[in-house]
Each structure stands twice: as structure tokens, then as C-alpha cells.
Length: 93
Image (cartoon, rainbow, N blue to C red; front, top):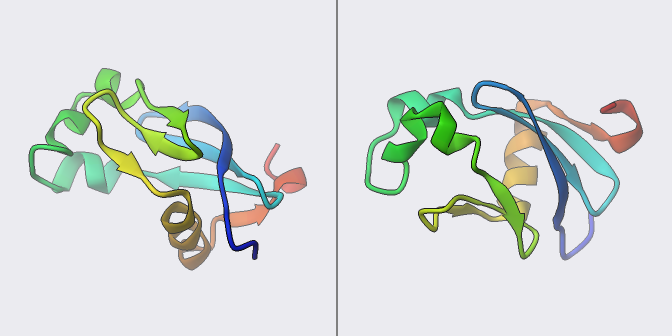
């Protein structure tokens, strides 16, 4: 694993599900439905609206939403690795 990882691309593949491509050649799908439906707090509350969730974009290599909520790319990759959803990017098509 590189010391510095960026998210290089994303695709919205289902409600609250993103496919992410990382700078080290890995990719995978991340299901955010639990975050969107169960978590509370001012930063994640807007995620309950799928239209808001879909406004996600990549900024400075991390996932970002218009309310300023962001997810660090290294934490995203670690979470996906632990969930078993990370694989070589060539297999993520």
C-alpha cells in the first residue's frame, strides 16, 4: 500500500452505493446505507436524502459533500479492505 492514497474516480451505482477507484490501482464498492439511515448528527443527517447523498464529488483525493462532510481516502480504503470489497481496479469494471 502506498503511503499516500487518493480517490481518483467514483460512480454512483445504486442508492447510497458508490464504486471508488484509488490511486494505487485498487477499486471497490462501498455501501453507505447504514450511514445514511442509522447515523445521526448535523454532518450526516442530510445523507438521509438520496438526492443530497448523490451530490458527492472528489476533492483533494477524498469524498466530499456540499455541507463540508468529507471522507479521507485512506480511511475509505481501509474500511473497504476490512469489508472485503476492495480488489484490483481491473476487476472492478
